[in-house]
Every structure is written in C-alpha cells, then in structure tokens.
Length: 561
Image (tube, rainbow, N blue to C red; front, side, top):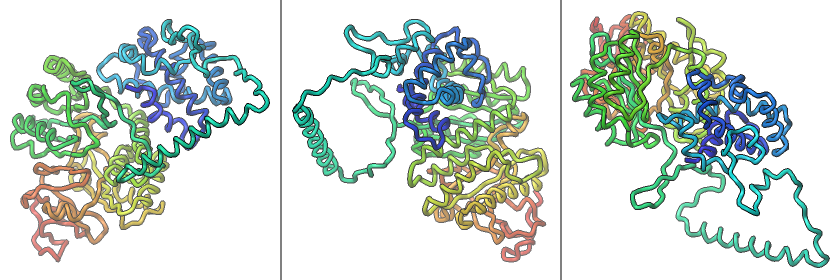
C-alpha cells in the first residue's frame, strides 16, 4: 500500500486548495513520511489514541511533537529543502497533521495504527530525509548503502560541478539529443498502438497493487468499501435499510441474508449498485449471525462498512451488550459503539469528504458521481427553518459550477427529516428545504431545468430516530440523477408537478426491492405501493392517487391513513 501517494491524493488538495506550488506539494509529501514514522511509535500514538481528533485541530501537531525545538527543526528543514517560507511551512504541516491522522486511521482499519505503519514502513521510509532522525524513533530513517548518499534532497552540501573542458559541450549534448529522439519515437509508436488513446491531460487513476495466487501483480482501483446501514424500530421491525455495493452478486448475497432474518420487511431495503463500490464485504460470511443478534434490539442502528461495524442505541446498557455480542459473532471485525453526536465535527467531516469527492471527479464527470459527491455534505438547517447555512455556501457555489459545466445533467434534490413532528409537517418542511437548495443553486447560475425537488419527510430514514445522532442523520439533503425513461418504465417513481416539485410517494417510505441502479433512482413495479398524498388539502398537483386538490385525477379524497 502506498501510504504517501494516498495522503498526497486526499490530504494535499484540502491543505493547498488552488495553490499549485510544487515546492509546497513536495514539502507535504515529505512531511507525511515523517509524520507516519512518528505515529508508528506506540508511546507517541498512545497519548491521543482515544481522543476524538477534529480535522481542523490546529493544536494536534503540537501534541504529536511535544518538544518545541523538534517542531521548529521540522518546519525549518522542510522550508529550507523545498524553498518555502518557514512560517508557511509551519502552517502547512499544522493543517495537514490532523487530516493525515484521519486518513491513516482509515487505511489501518481494524489494525492498530502503530502496527499498520510498522508493517508498511517500506512504503514511506524512503521519503524520510536523513535529518529527521533527530525527531523520530531510532531505526525509522533508512540506512544508506555503503559508499552512497541517501538522496540529493537529504544532502546539506551543495552540488559540485566540474568545469567543462573546452570543446566538450557538444560531446556531452549528443547523447541527450539521441535519448530525446528515441523517447519521441517510442511515444509515437505507443500512441499509434492504442485504439482509443486518452488525452494527454486525462487524470491518472491511482491504483493499489495486490498479489494473486500465482504471484503475479494485479491492480485494484481505489474504490469505496461496500456498506450496509440498517435500523430497528421500537417494535422490533425493520425500520431502515440501505446498502452501497459494487455488483448485483453482492446485493443478492446481502438481500438473501436480510430476507432470511426479516422476511417481507426486507422489501424496505434500497441498494445503490455501482462499480465505484467494492464487490465484497468482509462481514458477509458472518452476516446471518450479525443480523440475528441485531434483530432482537429495538431502536438500534448499525453501519457495516469494510471491516468495521458501528452500532448505536439510546440505552447504554443495551448498546454495551450489543457490542459484546457482535464481537463474539464476528471476531475478525472491529465492532464499536458510536459516541454522542458531535455536531460540528460531523458537519466539518461531511464537507471535507464532499470536497475530496469533488476533487476526484476530474473533467466531464459522470453525473452519478457528481450526485454522490454532493450528497456527502451535511446541510444543518436551523430548527423548522429552510435557510442555507453559511458554512455550506462555498461548497454549493462549487457544486453550481460543476452542474453548469456538466452537459446532460439533471438532478433531483431530495429533502428528508426526522420524525419529531407530524407526517404532514415534516413532508412540507422537507420540500421547502429541497427547494431552498435548488433556489440557491439557480441563483449561482444553474439552469432551473436541470434541477427538480422532492420532499420525503420522515418516510425514508437511514438511521434510528431514538437517538440524537440517528435523528441528525435522518435530517438530510440527497442528490440523485433524474432519468425519466428509467423511472417511467419502473412504475413512475417521480413525476414533475405543476409547481416545479417532484411528486414521489410510497406507503411506507420505502420501495419493494427498490434499487439505486448506477446512481439513478428506480422504483418497484407494484401499483399498490404508491403513497397517498400525506397532506390532501394542499394546493399542489403532485399526487399519485386521486385527490380533491388535483381535478385532473378525479375528485375522491386520498385515504386518511
């Protein structure tokens, strides 16, 4: 695993923003190696292993290196090597430290961070300069082979060049010219052999190398782990269920396990099937046992992602027992109880994740990837309000540029709430919030015809509503690609109303075997799943069943349930 390359792709853009300075980029790359070597020390990592480190914790760097002289030495030497102002150097590494810490923890997964970094020392050790030995544990700086310098960047002596003898210039130049000509011919030959050559400016897709049984190297794309979110209601019924998987085979495996445990309630599950997610899930082998335990815990929620399971419950005693039972049922996975809601950290992390996802879109992005990236941000509306918070506006400004520049993109903005008010109130509030996001994007230049809105109220939860954290997750704005043809062929999941909103309904707020196929929303084909208007006395025409406020559909009122 190339840890430095991963940090360069994920952390550096967040630290540098629009700054394209090569010196600063190289400075950060070298700092990541020094930082990783420091975290590989168990005593150092143990000082803050149990802390909840915020991504903008400007004091974190000082806690990693408590010796001020060592901190000064790091910023001074990095500044000198990469021709960067020393104050700027200190600022860059202070910003980078907490972000790099989160990424390294994510890469380590269930493996303790020091063990993970020591196991992968060879992937970053060669980036560590010789002078860093004074600020790192012994043995972290690679020893130079006898008679060789470690690298030009670690030498403090200026390079000494011999004076060229008269008349030797052309002799020295001829081999270089020959190499340039050979390189040009090789490039032309390579281009000619490609059936569909990529443009020169096409971003490079970074991949990790793995090893198959025959010992040959294979390349695996940098994709998101498959995940399953599931929540129980107060009456031990399945309350919410959503998965993100890389192919139909994994979706079927998970659905079979859920169906075996919950029967017809499994129809509440929605799946986003796309090759941007992994096609395997480490928990799959234990899923039957995991679900059997979880099914008996009312008002609980669980997130399975990669090799981690996060669980939550309003009852602390129940939560402790749930963690213990799941650890016994799935000993190869990391099972953790979610802590209380840290609102600011959740918002900051969501915007950081959304920015990173947008940074990876490249030119001419797939609208499905755009929708997923935009959905990562948390828009934390004030209570009973639909005004866009200031913290979200810079990201929405950038989203407006992407939507405007991406051809043939039509998005649906979907508002969701928790269950703390009446169905009708929540439905209207969710519509207003979705419309507020649309209005903001339109004000930034997005063509209104590219955006549709829908309010789902409390009908499609992704977490429990018994905890503050669960309710926070249920209050959300989601984006998805609008595909009229696909939706009409699946029983009309979305229709445009006269007021510009999108009419969308289901009796339970879920879909029978509903699937987000390639990021496009589709619905089940059963007509009896259509949801009556939860507010039959409103003045819009978005109803899917006959209603007195929609003369084109008849005059009979919707059912009162």
